[in-house]
Image 1 (cartoon, rainbow, N blue to C red):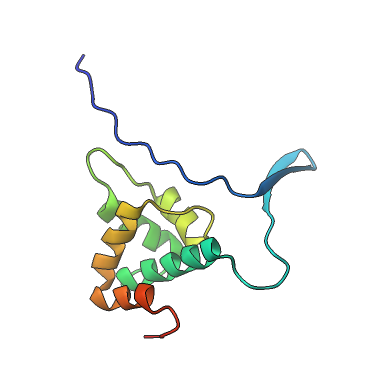
Image 2: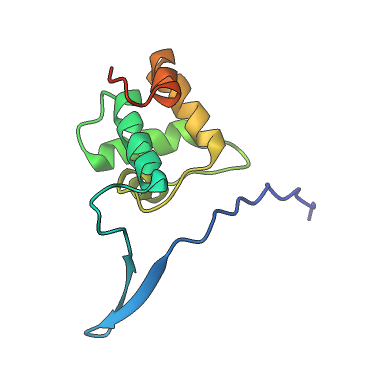
Length: 122
C-alpha cells in the first residue's frame, strides 16, 4: 500500500440554510433577502451557471452538459462528477476557483470582461 498525498480541501463559507422536515423528508431551504435582489454570492453562482452553458455550446440538456463538463474538468487528483456540475448549474453550490478559471478558459477570453465590468452585457 502506498501513501497518497491528500488533495487540498476547499472550505466554503457556511450558507444561511435551515433544515425542515416535512412528511418524513428533510429538505434544505435557503433564506434569501425578500428584496428580490440577488446576493453577491447568488449572482456569482448564476454567472458561473451561464458560463458553463457558454463553455459547452454542444450540450443539449442539463444532463448532457453535466456529463461533458465533468469529463473535461476531472483531473487525476480531483474528480468532478456530473452531480457536482448539476449542483453548480442549479446554483446550489459554489465551484472552487480552479474550476472557475478552467471554465473561463473554455468559454473564451471575452468572459473575463464580465468579471471586470458586470454591467456590460456581451
